[in-house]
Length: 141
Image (cartoon, helix red, strand yellow):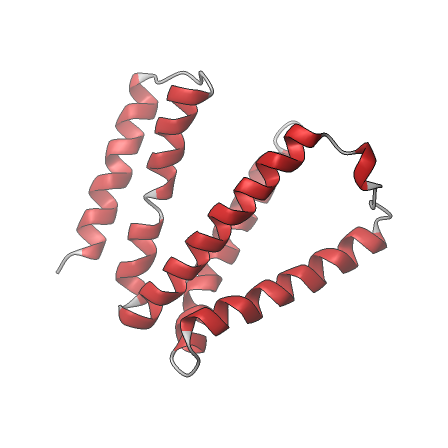
């Protein structure tokens, strides 16, 4: 159970990969902003069904106001990310857009180090540099 995060992280990577391919095909025939809206509705419905199925609804007054603030900010960042991602997929090849999108990992490493106090070891820094090198290699002709 201690490594269960890894299963979900691998699932996230797998589904993010599918997102690129399915999204690329979808935005070929639909405006990227409308495509993002449709995707958001699907996510909203699926998540609501899961919350209902697992009986995880909670009254809003029992939720942390700080937690809600950061979730709203996270939602705004996610929306901006999706709008940019779908527009990039509409304009460019998925095989180049997806690696650049994965530079988000490097941004996470830097922000986690600077703002959350997570350690920046030589392994973390080197791994981040490898991600940048890989993204640049895959995204350039």
